[in-house]
Image 1 (cartoon, helix red, strand yellow):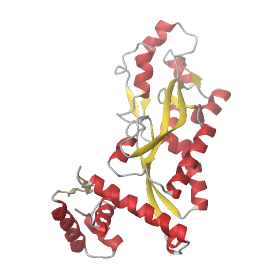
Image 2 (cartoon, one colour):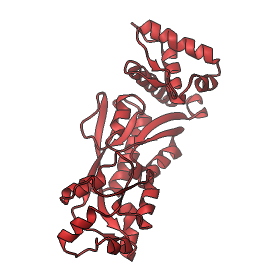
Image 3 (tube, rainbow, N blue to C red):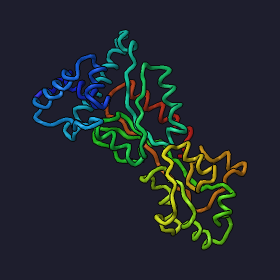
Image 4 (cartoon, rainbow, N blue to C red):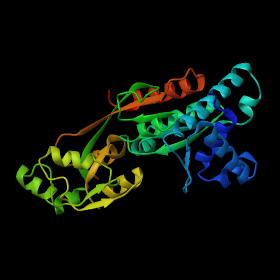
Amino acid sequence: MEIPLDLARTLAVVIDEGTFDAAARRLRITPSAVSQRVKALEQQLGRVLVVRSKPVRATEAGAPIVRLARQVALLEHDALAEFGLDEASARPISLALAVNADSLATWFLPALARVGERHPVVFDLHRDDQDFTAGLLESGTVLGAVTSQSAPVAGCLVRPLGVMRYEAVATPAFAERWGLVPGAADGSVLVALAAAPVVDFDRRDDLQREYLSGRGVDPHRPPRHYVPASNDFATAIKLGLGWGLLPAFQSSVELEHGGLVRLGGTPVDVPLYWQQWNLRSPLLDAIAEAVIAEARRELRT
C-alpha cells in the first residue's frame, strides 16, 4: 500500500490549522475539497485519521501520517536547498518545536535566532512542561523537543543538554511574615511551609511539590496561586504573592541585591535533553547544534 503524499500533506495542514476552513484558506482550495481529500485518504487507508472537533486533532492512526508529511516537507526543503534552487529560500519552511516554559523564557530563543540568521525557517513553538514535551514528538506534532525524558522516543535521537537547578526563594518580607526566615529552627520552618502560600505554574507543576516532599512536608497542604507563564510566575514570587522555585536565570540578581532570600533545603535539579526525529536533515542538525551549544553555555553540566 502506498500513502498519497499530497493527501498526507493536506491532513497535516488540517491538523496544523485546527479547522477545515483554515486549512482551505492556506491551501487555497474550498473547505469541501479539503474534506474530500481527508475522506479519500481515510478510505484508502481504512482508518479514521482525524477527530472532527475544534480544534481538529489527529487520531492514533492519523499521527504517523502527519509525521510522515512533515518529514517529507523537511527533506524536500533540504533537497531544494542543496540544489541551490530559489524555491528553498523564497518561502521559509515552518518547523514545529516543543520546549518547556522556563527554557523558552531564558536560554532557548537565542539559539533559534542564530539559526534564523543563516537559514530560511520560521518556528512554530509549542510550550509545555518538560515532562510532557516528548509526547508531542510521539504524536508527530513537533520534530524536536526540549524534554526531561532521557529515553529516546521511538524514531528519535536524544542528546543531553544540561541541568536547570531550581532553588526555593521568597521576598524577605514574605519569608518574615510566614516564619520562613533562613536560619530559623527547622521544625518551625516546616510548619510554616505547610501554611505559607506557594506559587505553582499550573496544576501539572511538580517542582514545588517535589521540594516540599523532600523537606518532609505534605505537598498538598499549602494554599496555592497558579500563574501559568514563566516570567509572570517569577514576578509573582518577586512581588511577594508566595514562595516558589526559580532557576538562577530568574533569581540571581534579586538574591545578590536582597530582593529575594533562599528558603534552604536541597535544590531541585531538572536534567534536560534534546530529542529530534532521526532524519538526515542539514536544517534539523543546524537547529540541534545551536540548541545544544546554547544549553551548554547556560545550563549546569
